[in-house]
Structure formats: C-alpha cells, structure tokens
Image (cartoon, rainbow, N blue to C red; front, side, top):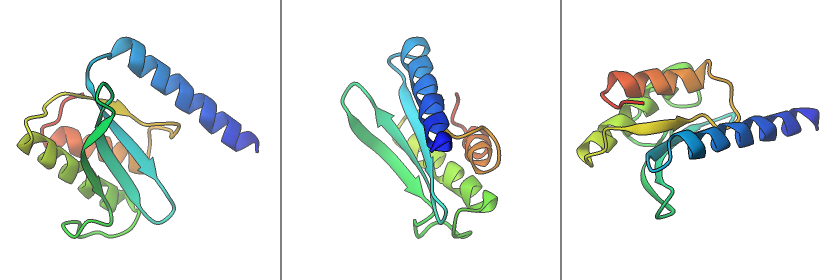
Length: 116
C-alpha cells in the first residue's frame, strides 16, 4: 500500500508542476503496464486526446513493454505529432521515475523531432 501512496504523491507533484509552469502547452502523457506501454498527446483545455501510440500498434516491430518497444512508441508518437503540426509538448511522466522505458520514450521522441 505504501508504494501506491508514493506513486500517487509523485503523480500529483508532477501534474501540479506541469499545470503551473507549462500551462497552455500540450501534454505528452506516458503510461506503462507490465505487458505494454502507451503514450498520448493530450489537449487539457479541450479535454481531448489528439494523438496516441502504444506497443500494441501494428507499426511497432518490438512488441511488449521492453526498452526497445518503448523507444519505438516514442518515435511513432513523435512522427504522428509532427504530421499533425505539433512540435512542442510538455512531458508528463506521471508517477513513474525517469529511467528505463519512460526515459526511452522521451529520448526517442526528442530524436524524432518533438521538443520538450
């Protein structure tokens, strides 16, 4: 139970920082599960998801929630964002620590041309 409380505190702290410092920008939100990893670009003003990608997509070659799969998800979400004309976002890691799969998504998205 303590781990869930710590996760929720980190998540609230990250979201608060995003709302105060980067208000008005689109948010690249990341979620990971044991089997898959998901990324989506959200417009908080409209309350809508604009772009999404996950390790379940057909374009992803490395299936599953591995670091390689996460890197492909990051690259795919960045490509879709650039096609839609989105160049700047703010990275929302949720309550996850910035290493491993979360870091792989962020680095791949930056390399593909998304800036945050």
